[in-house]
Image 1: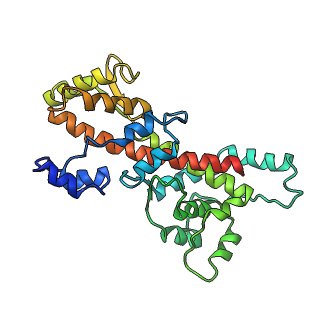
Image 2: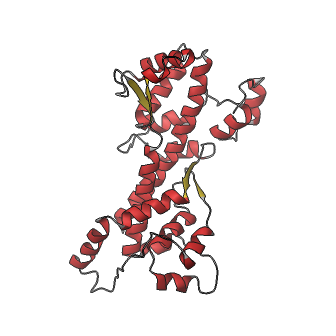
Length: 295
């Protein structure tokens, strides 16, 4: 719970200029809405990907020092690995290797381990890795993220060899040069990020809030802002699904005449943090997509 009685904005802005939006919100109970480069990141970059995320280097550099990182949990990554290991993607990669002559050239694939129970050395190695991984905007794949995926896909004999002289292991992007392992690890990361992005969607049914006067007033404002963003119907309003739409909505809210509404400002604080986190996830997904295309 945050306090919104934050005193003098001038002194606070001077002291928090190196904070992320989430840190500012946690410390002072507000987000600096005068400085929101996340809007430019999603709307003004020259080169945009399908969901509106700018890949402009300038936009990334502007945000990098102050943007709120996203979090991928170990359980989310492991779930993605398990789902991928049970999908047709594995067969598709194996067939590609067979048809392209890669097996004759010395490349290999293997039977994937059972992930129904991760115990023994595999489980111990996973337990030694952090439960939460911070995903920042530098668009590099954390070694811990790569390692978690590898621990889900490597065969037992390879894993035993890696852990022969130590209790834990940390692998880097060099292991992705192996065609089979690289394809699996990168696709698992892409799928994990895709699932995480879906979790940001919020859908509010008007009927569920009709007894709450403050919520109804806020929804009335949001309804006007999102009306041209294909985010509403006659019974509900949603956001958090399309970053370009959300960035446009944020821009409209910032310039609207309803900023004196405490409910609007509180909504904006969380909205900015959500967009910043999604920017980090989209950049890391873009990095993984670029890498998997190059394998």
